[in-house]
Image 1 (cartoon, helix red, strand yellow):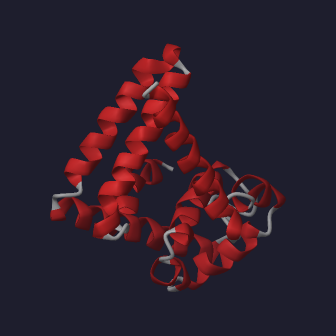
Image 2 (image 1 turned 60 degrees about the horizontal axis):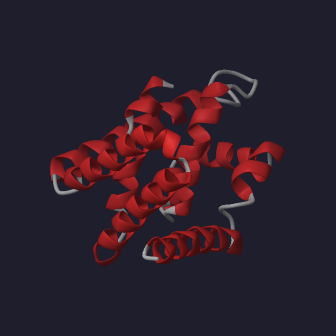
Length: 172
Protein backbone atom coordinates (compact mmCIF):
# COMPACT_ATOMS: atom_id res chain seq x y z
CA UNK A 1 0.00 0.00 0.00
CA UNK A 2 2.89 2.34 0.69
CA UNK A 3 4.16 1.84 -2.86
CA UNK A 4 0.79 2.88 -4.23
CA UNK A 5 0.87 6.01 -2.06
CA UNK A 6 4.39 6.92 -3.25
CA UNK A 7 3.35 6.91 -6.91
CA UNK A 8 2.10 10.31 -8.12
CA UNK A 9 -1.02 9.81 -10.27
CA UNK A 10 -1.35 13.52 -11.08
CA UNK A 11 1.99 13.62 -12.87
CA UNK A 12 1.18 10.43 -14.75
CA UNK A 13 -2.26 11.67 -15.78
CA UNK A 14 -1.13 15.08 -16.98
CA UNK A 15 1.85 13.57 -18.78
CA UNK A 16 -0.60 11.47 -20.82
CA UNK A 17 -2.75 14.43 -21.79
CA UNK A 18 -1.76 15.64 -25.28
CA UNK A 19 0.48 18.71 -25.12
CA UNK A 20 -2.02 20.92 -26.90
CA UNK A 21 -4.63 20.22 -24.19
CA UNK A 22 -2.36 20.10 -21.15
CA UNK A 23 -2.53 23.83 -20.38
CA UNK A 24 -6.32 23.79 -20.71
CA UNK A 25 -6.59 20.79 -18.35
CA UNK A 26 -4.22 22.38 -15.82
CA UNK A 27 -6.21 25.62 -15.81
CA UNK A 28 -9.43 23.65 -15.53
CA UNK A 29 -8.15 21.76 -12.49
CA UNK A 30 -7.08 25.00 -10.82
CA UNK A 31 -10.48 26.55 -11.53
CA UNK A 32 -12.21 23.55 -9.98
CA UNK A 33 -10.15 24.00 -6.81
CA UNK A 34 -10.91 27.72 -6.70
CA UNK A 35 -14.64 27.09 -7.24
CA UNK A 36 -14.65 24.52 -4.42
CA UNK A 37 -12.80 27.00 -2.21
CA UNK A 38 -15.52 29.58 -2.86
CA UNK A 39 -18.19 27.02 -1.95
CA UNK A 40 -16.51 26.10 1.32
CA UNK A 41 -14.57 29.06 2.72
CA UNK A 42 -13.99 27.20 5.98
CA UNK A 43 -11.81 24.75 4.02
CA UNK A 44 -9.85 27.48 2.25
CA UNK A 45 -6.53 26.47 3.82
CA UNK A 46 -6.91 22.92 2.49
CA UNK A 47 -7.81 24.21 -0.96
CA UNK A 48 -4.80 26.55 -0.92
CA UNK A 49 -2.61 23.47 -0.40
CA UNK A 50 -4.32 21.75 -3.32
CA UNK A 51 -3.78 24.81 -5.48
CA UNK A 52 -0.10 24.98 -4.57
CA UNK A 53 0.18 21.26 -5.34
CA UNK A 54 -1.38 21.88 -8.78
CA UNK A 55 1.28 24.50 -9.58
CA UNK A 56 4.07 22.24 -8.32
CA UNK A 57 2.77 19.38 -10.44
CA UNK A 58 2.85 21.62 -13.52
CA UNK A 59 6.47 22.46 -12.77
CA UNK A 60 7.36 18.78 -12.37
CA UNK A 61 5.88 18.03 -15.80
CA UNK A 62 8.71 20.04 -17.34
CA UNK A 63 11.33 17.66 -15.91
CA UNK A 64 11.75 14.57 -18.11
CA UNK A 65 13.55 12.66 -15.35
CA UNK A 66 10.57 13.03 -13.01
CA UNK A 67 8.20 11.78 -15.73
CA UNK A 68 10.46 8.80 -16.45
CA UNK A 69 10.79 7.94 -12.74
CA UNK A 70 7.02 8.19 -12.33
CA UNK A 71 6.37 5.71 -15.14
CA UNK A 72 9.08 3.35 -13.87
CA UNK A 73 7.55 3.45 -10.38
CA UNK A 74 4.15 2.55 -11.82
CA UNK A 75 5.61 -0.28 -13.90
CA UNK A 76 7.43 -1.66 -10.85
CA UNK A 77 4.25 -1.42 -8.77
CA UNK A 78 2.25 -3.29 -11.42
CA UNK A 79 4.99 -5.91 -11.86
CA UNK A 80 4.95 -6.63 -8.12
CA UNK A 81 1.16 -6.85 -8.17
CA UNK A 82 1.43 -9.22 -11.15
CA UNK A 83 3.72 -11.55 -9.18
CA UNK A 84 1.43 -11.45 -6.13
CA UNK A 85 -1.69 -12.09 -8.22
CA UNK A 86 -0.04 -15.17 -9.72
CA UNK A 87 -0.10 -16.67 -6.21
CA UNK A 88 -3.42 -15.34 -4.80
CA UNK A 89 -6.83 -14.17 -6.05
CA UNK A 90 -6.48 -10.71 -4.50
CA UNK A 91 -3.42 -8.68 -3.52
CA UNK A 92 -3.33 -9.69 0.14
CA UNK A 93 -4.72 -13.20 -0.14
CA UNK A 94 -7.96 -14.87 -1.08
CA UNK A 95 -10.17 -12.13 0.39
CA UNK A 96 -10.74 -8.61 -0.89
CA UNK A 97 -8.76 -6.16 1.28
CA UNK A 98 -7.62 -2.54 1.64
CA UNK A 99 -4.69 -3.29 -0.67
CA UNK A 100 -7.22 -4.00 -3.43
CA UNK A 101 -9.17 -0.86 -2.55
CA UNK A 102 -5.99 1.16 -3.12
CA UNK A 103 -5.01 -0.54 -6.38
CA UNK A 104 -8.42 -0.28 -8.07
CA UNK A 105 -8.30 3.52 -8.57
CA UNK A 106 -4.85 3.13 -10.15
CA UNK A 107 -6.23 0.60 -12.63
CA UNK A 108 -9.33 2.75 -13.22
CA UNK A 109 -7.10 5.73 -13.99
CA UNK A 110 -5.12 3.66 -16.50
CA UNK A 111 -8.37 2.59 -18.09
CA UNK A 112 -9.69 6.16 -18.20
CA UNK A 113 -6.46 7.35 -19.83
CA UNK A 114 -6.84 4.56 -22.40
CA UNK A 115 -3.44 3.01 -21.67
CA UNK A 116 -4.83 -0.37 -20.61
CA UNK A 117 -2.96 -2.27 -23.33
CA UNK A 118 0.43 -1.06 -22.15
CA UNK A 119 -0.09 -1.36 -18.40
CA UNK A 120 -2.93 -3.81 -17.72
CA UNK A 121 -3.42 -6.13 -20.70
CA UNK A 122 0.32 -6.79 -20.97
CA UNK A 123 0.16 -8.40 -17.52
CA UNK A 124 -2.13 -11.46 -17.67
CA UNK A 125 -2.75 -11.79 -13.92
CA UNK A 126 -3.60 -8.11 -13.53
CA UNK A 127 -5.83 -8.32 -16.60
CA UNK A 128 -7.75 -11.23 -15.10
CA UNK A 129 -7.90 -9.47 -11.73
CA UNK A 130 -9.17 -6.27 -13.38
CA UNK A 131 -12.00 -8.17 -15.09
CA UNK A 132 -13.02 -9.75 -11.77
CA UNK A 133 -12.87 -6.44 -9.91
CA UNK A 134 -15.04 -4.66 -12.49
CA UNK A 135 -17.78 -7.21 -11.82
CA UNK A 136 -17.94 -6.37 -8.12
CA UNK A 137 -21.10 -4.47 -7.10
CA UNK A 138 -19.02 -1.96 -5.14
CA UNK A 139 -16.94 -1.14 -8.24
CA UNK A 140 -20.04 -0.69 -10.35
CA UNK A 141 -21.64 1.57 -7.74
CA UNK A 142 -18.62 3.78 -7.08
CA UNK A 143 -16.41 3.88 -10.16
CA UNK A 144 -18.29 2.11 -12.93
CA UNK A 145 -21.26 4.47 -12.78
CA UNK A 146 -19.13 7.52 -13.42
CA UNK A 147 -16.27 6.38 -15.60
CA UNK A 148 -17.65 3.93 -18.12
CA UNK A 149 -19.13 4.67 -21.51
CA UNK A 150 -21.05 7.90 -21.98
CA UNK A 151 -21.29 8.53 -18.24
CA UNK A 152 -17.62 9.52 -17.98
CA UNK A 153 -18.26 12.26 -20.52
CA UNK A 154 -21.40 13.33 -18.66
CA UNK A 155 -19.41 13.57 -15.41
CA UNK A 156 -16.68 15.63 -17.05
CA UNK A 157 -19.23 17.85 -18.83
CA UNK A 158 -21.13 18.44 -15.59
CA UNK A 159 -17.92 19.53 -13.81
CA UNK A 160 -16.92 21.77 -16.73
CA UNK A 161 -20.37 23.43 -16.76
CA UNK A 162 -20.20 24.02 -13.00
CA UNK A 163 -16.82 25.71 -13.31
CA UNK A 164 -17.96 27.87 -16.24
CA UNK A 165 -21.15 29.01 -14.49
CA UNK A 166 -19.22 29.72 -11.32
CA UNK A 167 -16.66 31.78 -13.27
CA UNK A 168 -19.40 33.81 -14.98
CA UNK A 169 -21.22 34.48 -11.71
CA UNK A 170 -18.04 35.64 -10.01
CA UNK A 171 -17.79 38.47 -12.53
CA UNK A 172 -21.10 39.94 -11.34
